[in-house]
Image 1: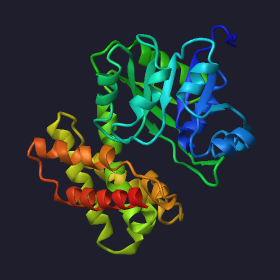
Image 2: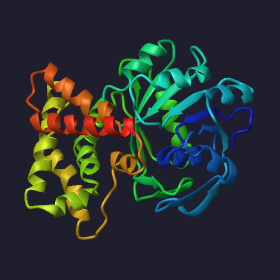
Image 3: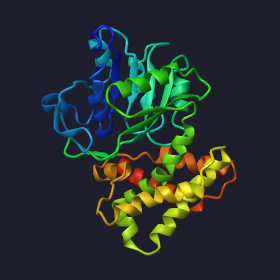
Length: 323
């Protein structure tokens, strides 16, 4: 067991469902603090309750919570070793908000966020700090605030950004997650894993958000649904291949098949964009869809279905922003 002197100091930015599960896990092996925003009052008063298919039910967790990074720094006795960003990937926002807690040349910034092309702004904002990119598989919801429901999967795929950067920080963070009882895998280049997950994210997220439906409900709605989803995923695959990340048709069909297999079980998933729309929150349209469309156009890859989803999701996000 680590002593308080040797335990890493971790600040979580974004205590949503995913962030809270990892904060709870890491609290076993590290000194942890969470920046909470919309759920601050509930977390401060009552803490969290985690109901997990993997880790157990009715887990009560009362972390140290703060309003913002300035407050976290004012209470900290030493610099943070890691700041884990689990907030929505909204361009041009988070680096400025976390900067008070990022110690030059020391703090590793861990991005547990969806999408592609999200790391660049952090790398430019913190050029002297390690940037760790993490692909997360952890289906969870927080409804009501403070109550986390976590499904049957928990996995992080971790690597340095850029891929040629020194890997000791990403490797150390991988081992830290493992020591806490989580599932973590280190990759010398994690970007192919981002693209593989994007097959699901860039297709299901906007479609479910726009239709207010779970993935299985979309598939069950019409005979054409499966073919349309497959066509969208193949556009994403083609863009990934244009950037040197080979994804086979069989892998695409596997991702679609995961949702199809849940139909008889009535076990549909609510992607993050759907959860955000239901809660009246802005959606990650640029990180998950917009970046992909732009990257496709740069390589001359035809992606008309994905572009239509981007236009519609962008309009939805703008409408939420006005309300």
